[in-house]
Image (cartoon, rainbow, N blue to C red; front, side, top):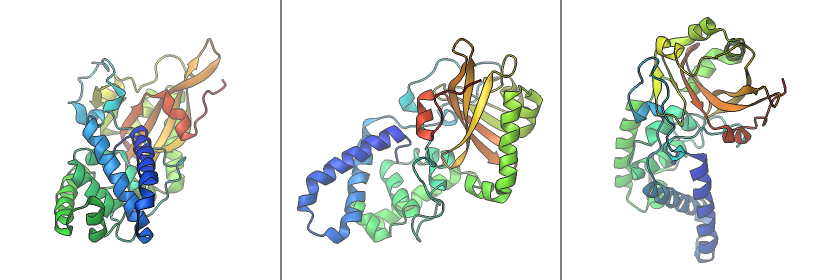
Amino acid sequence: MLGSVHDAEDALQNTLFRAWRGLPGLADRSSLRAWLYRIATNASLDAIARRRKRVLPFDYGPASAPGQGLGAPQAESVWIEPYPDGELGLESGYAAPEARYEQREAVELAFIAALQHLPPRQRAALVLREVLGFSAREAAEILETTVASVNSALQRARKAVDERLPERSQQATLRSLGDERVRSLVTRFIDAFEQGEIDTILAMLAEDATFAMPPYADWCKGREAIADSWLMPAGPAPRLRYVRTRASGQLAVGTYLLDSRARRYVPLALDVLTLRGEEISSVTAFRSPELFPRFGLPEALRP
């Protein structure tokens, strides 16, 4: 709903506080689950009303010209945040039989970014029905509206989201590749970056690949533009080290930069990879080292 782990934690605390105050007045304890989701939905809708829509740089403005650079960083509150699905125990599969999206699909960057373009109540209707698997009647009760209204909102939301999503989710892509090929791809990615092998890195990218680095608004598209971007390792190897992880249901690596004075590698960015077949179609490098503990990544690496 919110595109931000920080905002979601605030909404959760708000939800629990409202539930604690309201629990003595709840007559039908059998409807506890729906009642809690109604409170959580309202807390999320209240949060959306108070702040700007979160986006990825790809939706913030057009691609930058080659060699243009990244410009000045924007406010952190503008950007969608990656979700630490491994650390928070997000399961594979569907939350309920009526759900349309797998649980890991529902935190992929493309899906979260598409949700942010929906009006708030359409967003809520789609999450309740298609992600959490509530029936139309249950969703109507949670949103305190009619079944017809929920179905109408869901139809519009589904159309808008489908227009923005790629043909294949990252979950489907990862399954089609299989664990061995995925491991090989990530190993090649890490080895190429740690050794500064630019040609190998570019060969792994799709021709129309994109690269963005929130909190910077500028982003680039195409191998030529990416070759001139901040993604490429600069200086002699080995200035970079990488640790594998998962973020937003996708492949990801924690990037560490050598601090020669401290004689250790320090957190630089969390790179979330989007695949199209065996090619990397997008790299979103969240330059927010404070995210590392959420993903179970070490605070530093020894040389």
